[in-house]
Each structure stands twice: as C-alpha cells, then as structure tokens.
Length: 222
Image (cartoon, rainbow, N blue to C red; front, top):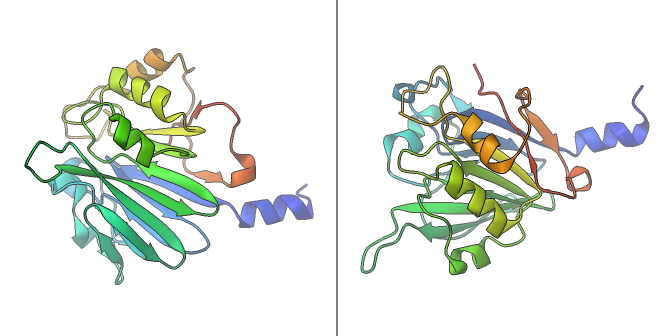
C-alpha cells in the first residue's frame, strides 16, 4: 500500500518514454519535451506527439520530423541557451570541423532539479570542452548502435568521462528499426551491465537517482 510520501514522490516524478530511434518524450511538471522526432521511414510510428519544447540534434530526417509534433512548441535547433516554462536547455555544438558549422547538437535539459543530456547524433567521444559543458549530468540519453553515431565502445568511453547517474541507451537495432545498427547487447557486454527486461517507461526524481552509474533499458513505444 502506498504511503502519502510515496504518492507525492510518484506525482513529482519525471516520466521518460522512448518513442524509438533518438526520440524521447520527457514529461515534467513544467513542460513536455520531445527530442529528435522521427518519421515512419525510420521504422517507428510515433503518431502525433504533443509537446511544449522540441529539440532537434541534426538535420538528418530521422532526427527532424517536426510534422510528428502537435501544438505550438518551442523548436530548438542548434547551439545556444533557451528557456520555456522554467525548463532550461543548453545546446552544445558537436562534430564541428574547423571552419564549418556543427553537424550535430547535444542538449542539456534542466528540469525537476535534474540535468538530462541528450547526445543526439554525436559520432565521437566528447572532447574535454564538450565534457565540461555536459558536466554534472544525472540522466544520459546515449546512442550505442553506431551508423554515424556512437558505437558501443565509444559509448562506454563517454560514460566514463561524463559519469552520469543513469544511462538510457538509444539508436540501436530493434525489430522495427530500418537503419543498420548494432544491437544493444554489445553495449551491455562492453559496460558489463546485466541483461534486463526493458521498461515501458521510466519515472524518476532527484531523490530516487542511483548513487552509482546505472543502465536502464526502455522498450520503444509500439
């Protein structure tokens, strides 16, 4: 039976659902954030997702299907500092070549007294400057399947550098994914994490964060 304090903790928890590919719906008390909405051509059917804020990490079609988002959200597409409904978001340029614009943007989202980092299509282990901007991450949304983004080995190195409390893999092979990706099993072996049944959603608040880095698998929404 839930106590009154248990009920309050559930009500104050932030909810994450993996919609597939690089796309998550993050729902806090302040706002609903959708990351990298993907098209049906990715293999995932996310429907029409209502959002207050949308982050887009890349102009790749699998990261930028804004037609899948309902409402009149703030669309964030690139480096900078942004705020809506008391949610603070910092876009960090990644995969930048000398003299060229960044090919991808990682986002640090601050809400519910937590820092969430969505690495987008990051294709290299973060540099020292990038690590500094991403420091203090509580939840890390981490590509692990390769194909133009981090693979299992690079993902493990990234965890070591950023030291997040909770890691949620994304962009890996599933029965519906159309991209040629590595399965998540390789990442789990690389990190030494045990295989676990994916959760349909994650509810978390600051007080329930683990003390040691913990990998959580989410099942994509069907």
